[in-house]
Length: 102
Ligand SMILES: [Zn+2]
Image (cartoon, rainbow, N blue to C red; front, side, top):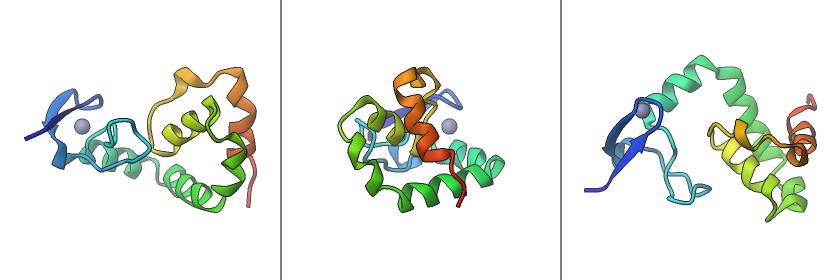
């Protein structure tokens, strides 16, 4: 039985306690389902916006494909904490992506 570490609740849990995330190198969400649910409950707006924009605007992102910005965005959309990669070169991309209202 495979286990995975949840960085949020700091426990090793069975991978069945994690959602799959094909954007991640190991194929699993960073945080366990319980932690992710708690996070989404605390941030419903962010979650809705994230999901909607990710779906609506996936194609325009193709121009960033393969770059650091693309990786960072995928992690960001997947709910990971990517503050460490918020460097200058992706700042504009995130503004592009998140800054505009409907
Ligand atoms: Zn957890």
